[in-house]
Length: 168
Image (cartoon, rainbow, N blue to C red; front, side):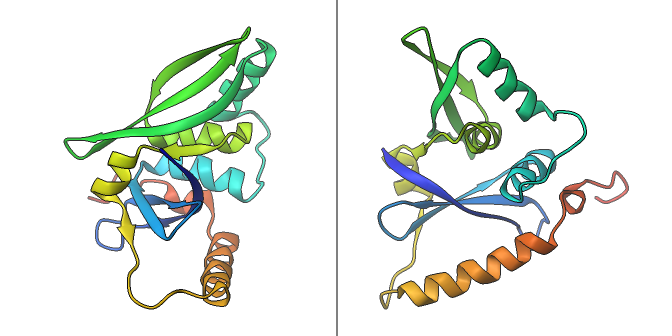
C-alpha cells in the first residue's frame, strides 16, 4: 500500500469525463481515476476552499461523523475490478476501526474534508498506475507543472463539471 496525494482534477479530453489524478507520495507514479461530475465538483470545491450556504453531501457526512465522535482516519483505493475502482473509508469510533465500502471519488471528497491520508493498494498502482520514464524530472519542472495546474484550478468552477442533459 502506498500513500497518495491529490495531484489534481481535470477532464478526459475525448469523453469530457472528469478525472482525479493521484500521485504516489514517494516516487513518480500517477493513478488516474475517472469520476462523476458531481464528485469532481465536490473535490474541486474543497481544493479551492469554496463554500456553499448549506452543507453539501460530503460536508454533511463529515459533520455527522464528527457529531457522533467518529473520525475518518484514511481512505484506500483497494482494487480495480472490471474497469471499476473500489475504495474503503476507514472510520475510527470508540477505539475501533470500521471499514466502509465506497466509490473512490466519494472517499477522496471525504478525505479532503477530514484531512485524512489517501492510500492505494500496490496491485492497483501496478495495474493502472502510470510512471513517467526517461529523464529525471527536476523539482523546478514539477513546480512549473503544478503552478500551471493551480492556475487552471483557480479559473475552473464547479459549474463546469455540471452535466447538460442535452449533451450526449
